[in-house]
Length: 206
Image (cartoon, rainbow, N blue to C red; front, top):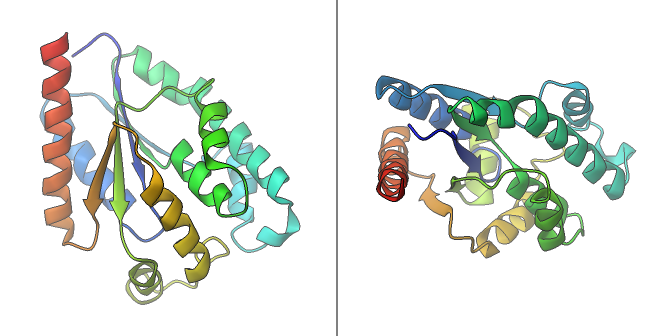
């Protein structure tokens, strides 16, 4: 294991199965001897709790105030969990990171590229981004019919379509796009292939 840990971010619109895939990957990596820290954004900290309250009353904040909350939550997340875990040589798996902020806030009218630049001033670059792709219609179907949940204010199909379009435009070299419409087992298999490839490349360059 390298002295510095590894950061893997899971991104995508709602309903793509990020939490399921993170749990599967965490078990896989642990079985291979890696120490894993699984985390998520929004966090459970003070800013993250404020963001979660927006799920049912998003209209109470301006777009600028909402973005400021996401940035504050990430600064705290990076400072208190991500950087310490990486310094300990752990593999950090985060359910959402700054590309989600760029996509979701970009759908509100912010410049996604500027959001990414501002985040990369303090947030470490992921070694790998697993971008799970799903149509907005299938996303809504999963949320309503498989989870049995009502759509929150971030999960409206028209909004998800705008978010998905921004995700589709990202072209960073660290992104691995995975079709999330396949079975969880098949999605996991594809993720493991990408992760193993990244780990092997890291060993070769060490």
